[in-house]
Image 1: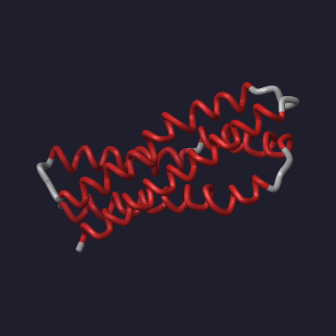
Image 2: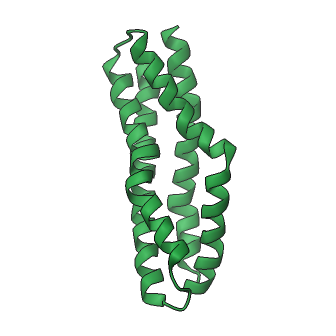
Length: 147
């Protein structure tokens, strides 16, 4: 049963870590080449669609439920627990503390205010890099805990 929890968590966390790693590297570089107006047009759509995405919400929230069930069942592999907590910190907590406030600011910002858009772009870049690092390291530790 413990192995089932770990593998289920690993699969979903790896999917999310891949998404944010792509966002923090390839898409970040692409977005940095856009003007503020282009950035706003594209990223605001990503925010709106991302919030509605069943797939993204599933790969963020289901691992949290799996982790809670893992603890309720009394399993205590510390490598898995640390990895899961890092993943949760990267996928959920940092998103709520860093990205969501920046998303809200971006959606409310006047498109004709390039200084504000540049500041928010910087916040989102830092937030996505933070999410990618924590999610990736957490997922790696969860994978190692299986062995």
